[in-house]
Image 1: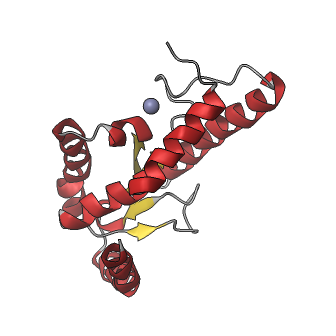
Image 2: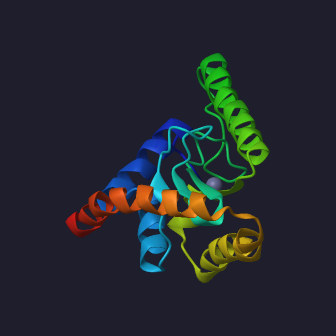
Amino acid sequence: MDVLTPEQRHFNMSQIHSKNTKPELIVRKWLWNNGYRYRLHRKDLPGKPDIALSKFKAVIFVHGCFWHMHNCKYGSKPKTNKKFWNKKLNGNVERDKINIKELKKLNWRVLVIWECEIMKWDTKLEVKINNFLNKNITLFKKNTVYDDIIENDANYAAEREGEYNLMKAR
Ligand SMILES: [Zn+2]
């Protein structure tokens, strides 16, 4: 039986994560180790996606189940302060929808990875990410303008060192 309120649960979850690492860092590390290169929190894209892979014209959001109301055991709304949480959490979900719509309009493909999927990391998730990214390889070859690739490569090469140092620091 679950005796914790969702707030406490969420707090517990974040405590668990901070011991090891943030869910976003786990995904980033996996991507990096598998040869995927990316940029973080691009301000020029709707919703500043956690991870943008320009080569694949793909973005990945790493969503906390509580804050983005995932349909899982961590995603339930608190029973106290209902009004506040309704507004806050529904607002998050609404913004997510708008951001994803805007990104798709700009021909970006969007993958949401949930905190709970990351917590029980398994090959299913790896296959999911690989499929999501590789699906676009043919599209990419057909549709991408060459100059755009060069420019994006230069962009993320510039960020690469900082990212690498972060990984080393872990
Ligand atoms: Zn979840």
